[in-house]
Image (cartoon, rainbow over all chains, first blue to last red; front, side):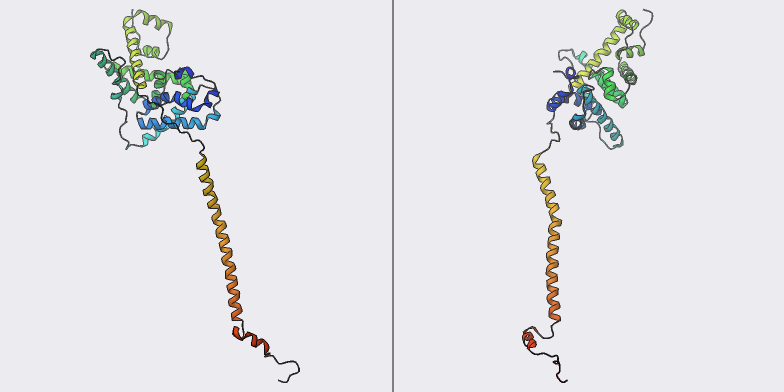
Amino acid sequence: MEPSAIADLPATEIDDFDAVVELHWPRIFRFTLASVRDRDAAQTLTQDCFVRAYRGRERFRGDCGIQTWLMQIAVNLVRDFARNRRLQFWRQAPAVDPDNASEWIPDRSLSPEAKALIQERLAAVWSATASLSERQRTVFLLRFVEDMALAEIAAATGMKEGTVKGHLFRAVQAVRERIGRLE
Amino acid sequence: MSQHLSAEEISNWMIGGRTPHVEQHVRDCPQCQAEVVRLDETLAHFRGSVRSLTVPPAKWEPARPQPLRWVLAVAALLILAAVPIYRNLADRQQARADTILLEQVDAALSRTVPAPMETLAKLVSWEPEKGENK
């Protein structure tokens, strides 16, 4: 089952926490990884996310979907991590190189020119997302990677829907500008 | 087609702000349509590249109560609690032994004659009897 299909499972579904972990781990992990660009840190943040969720599962009343609730925890963890990292000026470069991530190609049967073009654009998007503010990057990833609706993003980030829209607009503008430089 | 969509209109389109006027324009203008399709595809590829980074779940170990850990914790607490009790008991025994020793020393010091002569000393009264001349 795709995670998006179970977004609105009733609260009782959380009783089988192992199943929740198995189902949602990839989604939470890729969000944290794309946000912090450090595989080890993303693994730790994902683990922390599920530990917090496990400890707070009694308080989950199903006001929002499990996915939104988990993403809410992950967004807070990523925010705290970003704040702490700003102080760690000695920290080395991120372990996930956007160039490596942009080597991904949708179809191996594409011509070398088409592959090169896609990879170039992907590198531009990765680079653009790195230069976004933490809030812009979060809403951009939730919208365009996790396919979350604006209302869901608002619930996960604690922002108003209009604020989400504003951050998303600026993020898309920045990405478009970066891609536009390639032309 | 008098005018193409602005950068803002295209960005707005990408985040779901699709007015009838913009929708009509995207349908009719090949250039703007190509721009929107190119952006859509690029974002879809980005989604694919991020999703390709996903790893399977790590071994999930929530902080579940572990019986052995509880047994060890209780045992440690009992040992810690027993130490003051034991020390108190030992102190009391020591104090009792000290008291007995002090009593023995006191008794020894208050003797008028050495211990072997005590029985003889009891037979001889050093105090003059009543009516006896001094």
